Image 1 (cartoon, protein in one colour):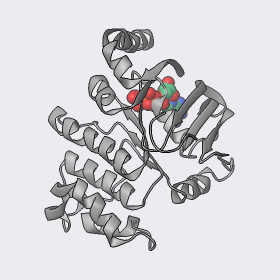
Image 2 (tube, rainbow, N blue to C red):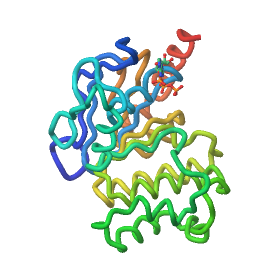
Image 3 (cartoon, rainbow, N blue to C red):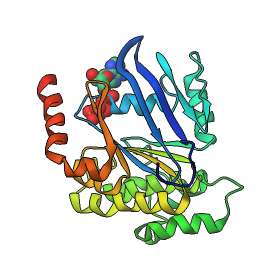
Image 4 (cartoon, rainbow, N blue to C red):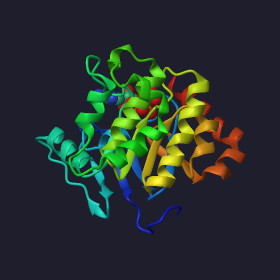
Length: 251
Ligand code: ATP
């Protein structure tokens, strides 16, 4: 494992998850260490978002467990949103596909709301240094930002809260390939510099593997290939065949 610690920050152990008692994700084992970027790949409908929603506490696991900082995560079946909020406060943050921004709030207001009292200005500045394009936009409302600027704000807002693990769902959604090629490496730099664990869900296979330490391919709710990102990238044809197999079987 890459990164400082031997113990994973985040671990899925035999995780089965789904909706209304019906499993769509089966027996998933996956880990993310400190300073490590891990990518979860798969065709549409493979179960990636369901996996992230279960990790962040929005869906209770049907079987198996999520371990965060070595302890099993306890999700209240009656109040999953409260469990998810507590988990986020403890440093397990999820940047969802829709980025979760408020159109009428400015960049500065988003960052201020996300910054905890114990987080110093120096950390906020370190985060902002990673996204210099946001600097002239501090007083602009999020609804008026471009897609790439919104994604930068969603990442910066998560990072000022000093997460231990950051999950990013489809960072590339709706963005030009050039913007994606600029943003994905920032996640790798941030993981290295802050000792953060990053779990990335992506459609851009080659680009995602180029910034990740390790990768997993999910097909119809199961992990079918996993390994070192460089090894997976060197077998890209086989990896992409896994994708196409899934897309064909679901069409
Ligand atoms: P995409 O890349 O298209 O977002 P994904 O890999 O994230 O795909 P999921 O969104 O996790 O896949 O969906 C996995 C399966 O669960 C799909 O068959 C989907 O139809 C089903 N599913 C997703 N959300 C719900 C829901 N709220 N209720 C019932 N089934 C759902």
